[in-house]
Length: 476
Image (tube, rainbow, N blue to C red; front, top):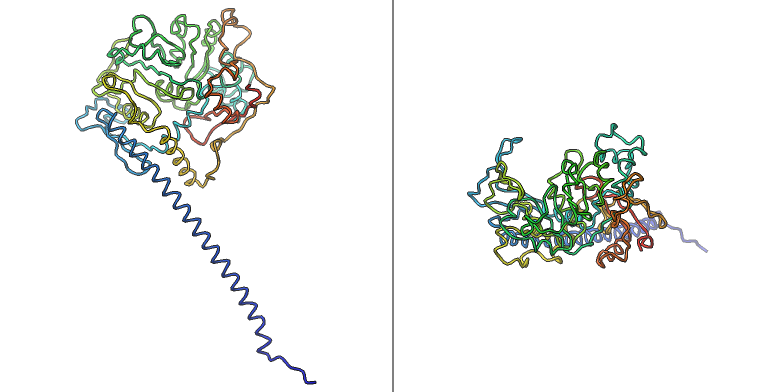
């Protein structure tokens, strides 16, 4: 039988067919990969377009709000995040900046995306310095604690026991105040404009009232500023006069803005008032005015923040306080513009002499639903620009984590050498308040946050938080 012999051409054909099959398979995979990439890219583009659309709609709402409520201010949209607030032509800029040798400008540029992320974050923050914060923060006791003690004699707490002796009087184990703890709060500034209106009863109708520094509360001014006093934020100079400032009010909470001092401690040991340190300031070069920090404090505890005595009406030519003589005049246009922006971001509600003459229905301020949508869009845009995962959740800004054991409640603030007045007072009532005694909205917030407290590491950095997890069982 004759065998069939394969020709050389037949021998080469089989590998060629195999190569074609492999090439076809590779091509199919490549096409699929390209299509998937294009589809994913298309999804991302569509997502970013929707995000930008939401932010543009919000900017339009803010622009309309400024037009309606700004008493001459106008907002000019630059893009989906940037906006410029302008004062009308002819505005008298009388304040001269000695540092930069210029008069205060008549327009101010803001990033609404950054502003809404920052101020909505304050709604979830703890703004009182606590022991758990120092325990969780890297080198919290060695480095940061030393920055909160004046005249320590060292740049670090090499002797922790000594630093604890300085801080124990005003250092609670955990946050004494919580987000959503109050519904409506009034922040009362010191402007002489308060004497042009009689906001006293309206101020006193709030669930909590926050005042600044030495501002007096007495019968002389009651119809202008009210008589209710719950919290007072003070700078170091005012803290030295805490006894006359408190003036027999045993329950008013005193919060020192920057540093404690051995002289303060000597006074604190003799008074029945709760006294704490503010958390979240920029320690390197100081912070903005006490009024702005009072708003941060209020926002960390209250659903609605009404401000009084912040001079935000046109025509302001004197630096006045309602309880003292006018000083050298200036025209703080930057403050007026920024407070107006905050009102149109839903952060505060402004009350002033000119605004008191019209109905305050707040319908031209963006709704909470629109603000929440803009916040979500700004957060998504920020994370997409920094290549962060979009689903980081509510703890995406936590840089440092700490944990509190369920069976560890920690000590209340105080020291063994307090006098009998303080020892037998109710100064620690906020620190030992049971979970079930909190407002229902505050309880729901703590449950939603899984028992996590959020603290600023330093200043206004968004992605620089210290987060401390508690067991909800320990809270209950």
